[in-house]
Image (cartoon, rainbow, N blue to C red; front, side, top):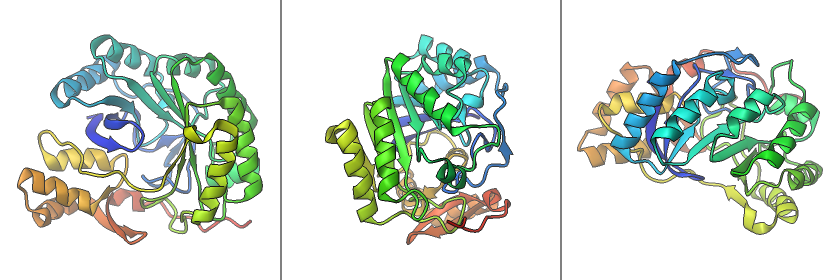
Length: 320
């Protein structure tokens, strides 16, 4: 099953998620990734799911669950899917909800990827840094990738794209958290000119245990820099987690497991979900543990995570 949710999204509203690539097939292995380290680092586009079957599953879920938006947001990089364009066209022919995609932008130097993303109503691209050294330490890209190609590709895409282009900028303490880097990032983003730029922080359990969000002062430095380039009405800080439980249809355990494929779930969200469905949280948690789920504490909050994300050895903090 490739569809999950709808889940509340801080950027998009009630979002039906589409997990269109296999577990942790990605072009990056970001230190802050909320589904663990990348196990299949790749830049090769390939087929994952049969397009018609994926479209049918999405359309059926839309009609049953009435989301506000449909979002390709897998536990990897969605543009690795060679059938992405076919899937986008198929969905848009059958439902009216906006179609969004959350990409790291690393393949936007490819014309076929650009063509696929032009089909989406909302495109989010990740630009955590414009510094080569920081990019390699923070995003840990596939060795084939070149940052200059990626940055140029994002700019060229922004000039062709007429939909809602947004950007995401994850800040990690000690990696991309200085004033000079903020200034250079803001200068670059002025050329991209997204409709909205979102500063994000690692608020769920990350791939590497040493990852932490920067201080409020650092966040303000980046907010001010981006605001000076884009305007204050286009820059947002996502400093909190989404509110409310996910919307679940059918087997709640199966639905929660699908969500956990893509990101950890807070314990209070599980408790709220159980309350709305008349279920006992402790019984639900026992069943989830039996299905490979653990509880982790991060920044003082309890999260449900898939146990297999712990199998990959974690790295030490990179030296400056």
